[in-house]
Image 1 (cartoon, rainbow, N blue to C red):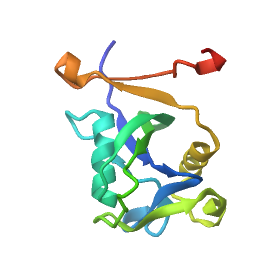
Image 2 (cartoon, rainbow, N blue to C red):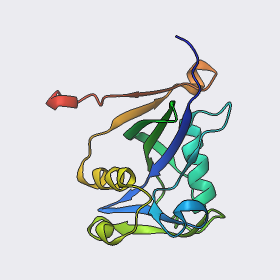
Image 3 (spheres, rainbow, N blue to C red):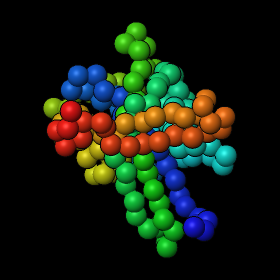
Image 4 (cartoon, rainbow, N blue to C red):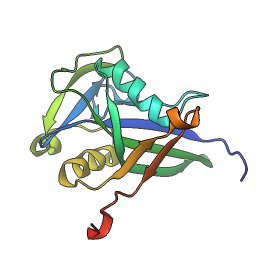
Length: 163
């Protein structure tokens, strides 16, 4: 293996029934568009830690990762750009509010997704797949047993109908 420069981003998919927590962008080229709470991974930060941090910054809620729903990969000017969408749970009594980077955050029913102006088709697909499927890679946190940040994202035990 060797090190390669990479653009690495993350998003949180928080579901409640057939609704997903979405945010409306406050700044930049996507101002006014809807998407998942998201952001970049900082140096010395695991992507799984970054997604929880971004969710807190944008929606002022605390979450726990339960799995990986989607991964988008592409090349931007020859540099790999990877985007990981995590399934995240929040307590039912937590209500999202608005952080500095967004003008609105709320749960939106999947039936209303097509009426929104999305950041991208990929983000729309990620949100839609989260409400239409319960399949995702499950996440196991080995940090406490290993003594350093260590996460495993793997197939569920009953993948493919096995007991």
